Image (cartoon, rainbow, N blue to C red; front, side):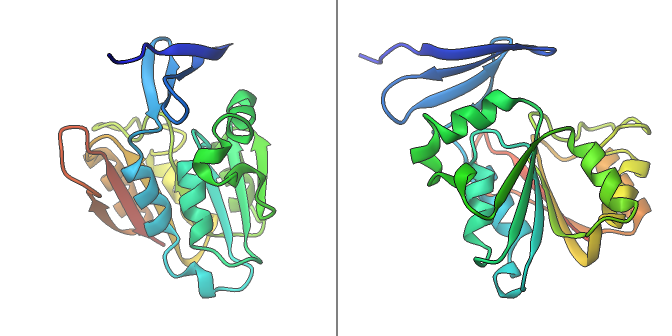
Length: 221
């Protein structure tokens, strides 16, 4: 008999109740307003996002990577596996409780990635962080966006992450030939148009097969 899901923590957010559910020691869900956002049983696309976006950075001294959001931490863990000990990883996460969960109940699932000495976590909007760096801060070797929702099929011109102006800012926040990795539920012609307008070379990866498979955009500045 399948065990029922138990809500073990929750917090209100502007988008609805953000909740952590558990069914057994290693089976977790994160939901918002009753909608499943993440599952500890299905993270192949998150693993692929972190691995592909940071491929080759292990040999780069003092590599700098921006990750957003934290989620269950699987993308962050995959990023860290690709980096040397002197790397710096900045994580932008809107909800402080996600950090608490990743440092607590979820920590064994992700190798305690949120406490890694290379990681600095800010409770912030990643669009603001990117804009700050684009204006003249130290640039990133890779920017990895693993948001609750990736780019939709159609992208609003003023979209803060996937619109043409936002993607151009992201390119300015990357070193020459830096990599942008973006998780998405389905291909987005609108986002691809923004990438082309900004001068990115991009490809779309499908890490696995199946009805619930997601996608990864990889774009090189």
